[in-house]
Amino acid sequence: MGTAADRVGRQLVSLYESEQTSIFGLASYLEFCPQRLPQSSCLVDCVAIYCASWVRANRGRPVKDVLGSHLFKKAIRSLRSATTSNEAYTPEILASMVLFARVLSFTGEYEHSQLRDHHLGIRHVAQQMGLPNDGDSLHAKLISATASSMIQPITVGVTANLKESPWKEQEALGYSPFWEKDSGEEEEEEEDTEADWNTLDGVHTGYNDDDIADDEIADDVIEAFLAAESKFEEVQAYLERIWLPELLEIWTNPPETKEKTISLLKAISKVERLFGKSLRKAWRGCLSVGLVEKFQDPNFFLGHSYSFAGYRFTGSFLTMLAWQSFLLRILYEFNQLLGVRDENLYGKYRDLCVRIWACAPSLSKLDPVSNVSMFKIIMPSFEIATDEELRHIIDLNIELVGHGVTGNVNIQKLRPHIIQLGEKLTGRQELKPA
Image 1 (cartoon, one colour):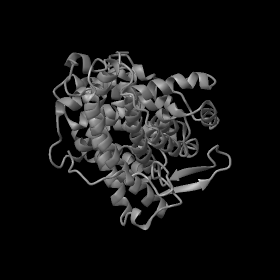
Image 2 (cartoon, helix red, strand yellow):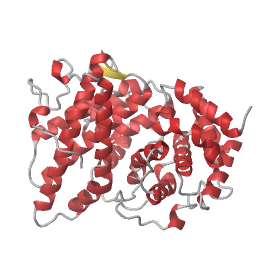
Image 3 (tube, one colour):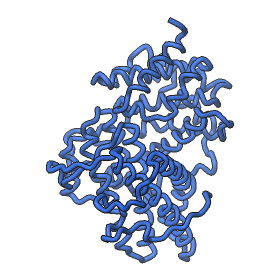
Image 4 (cartoon, helix red, strand yellow):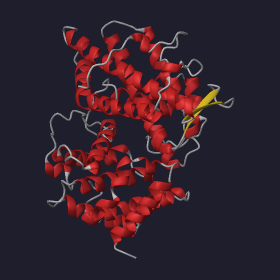
């Protein structure tokens, strides 16, 4: 039988290696958890409840049922004990906190604002731990994971400025209601030109599937995809840690001179072009070998749709496309603040959003937990959609629990949530504490 760590480790490995169609298997740090289980009973307990939730989702049973289970209560006790001791600042405890947060999110029982304190705790621990040691793959992967989770606090009104840590330890550790007793819980510059974006037939983004030049297809598709992911990590860091606070300040208190805004937009434009060039190459390469497939879809208003080879790949690609769209929206909106309405930039942004929408039909076929998670990633792209286009998206019957939309979904209910999220992720809305 072995120890609890052995048993939980075997279950995690089995699920992780066999699962390709669920949000549960998307976290890249999972593969480094089994070997760390013997070092932390807290990690054992949190991986156990994570696996139990994963199994329930695979069987089509409500994940929320784990909330009253013995495993759930045990994970809460372990987290409460670990985060109020000297153990708190270790990769194992950070992994435990991240996994537990995912379980809470996947149950569909909590609004974003209810998870705020838990995410603040994760951010506090990640900041206090600093950079990972050489060879610590778990910690390194968790850095990316906690950066991604910053979207969650942003959407409920927590500043994205990570230059300083304004939260006192007692506010961030042990404060989460889920831990309380009886609660239930600069890369080197590359040459780039506008031609990198524009195809010969004038398609703004260069995502023209019918005109793929031989030199646009990567010799090594996986290498191209990983290169795009590497650039994405930089984009993520720049936007969350530096640009969003500066953009918000400019938007809410426009400077008397334009120099600061122009300088910031030049930096964002440079990064967007480099990231877009890398992402375009990966997209075209993946199309060429079938990792991304384009289908004629007469039932969808665009007439076509895309599917991806495996859920992990879906999540990574859609996240990168979404973040590129954030950058383009920023450039368009803040150029307007300077009195410049760039129609070419607007066209580029809309083309990319339409590309993202074409992935929505495949998402509607996922299990409800994965469905919600993926829709959250692409939701800001619908800010640009007309009412008719948004109605077609609603007709896909995508699960909207967890987005603040309850009851019968309609445009009037959904539109305000889309606009709010889009504005917060592009520095156009003041982030007031929830």
